[in-house]
Length: 167
Image 1 (cartoon, rainbow, N blue to C red):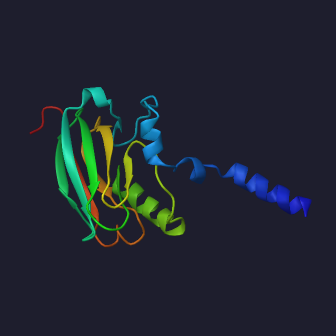
Image 2: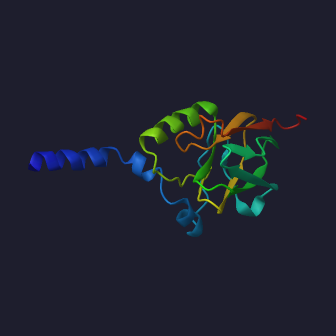
Image 3: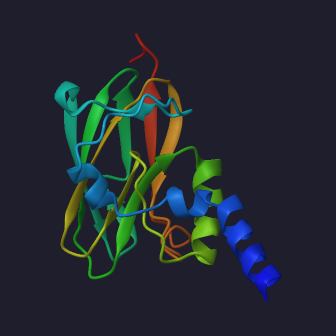
């Protein structure tokens, strides 16, 4: 019995990533936590004091984002105001398509997890959240709702980040 209990405790301790990678996004944003300097393939958390522009994003139960595609300049810091106009939970997660697909698969196994990464907004029906992101690298990236079934239904959009000097 003690060995079984110890095995469970050790298993949980060795796999904290799923627990720590997700949490209540709203609480984190209210804490005034320091801006992360972690650089991702698609940029880094943006400084709300250095926003270049604000983009109003709408998520609906038609499983679509509005707008569905964006063009952004490399280096630009964008404040996304993400509104859920639907009656079910939706989220917006920014990243490369490969990572979004992998995360969507993980969400099928853990459908109740919530997010606290700076490039994610988990939004209740009728509510809004903000994401401030600096696009430091040129390329094609995406955003999607990774709630099980939503991504597969087409709830995905595209972000084209233009290299400096590109028009």
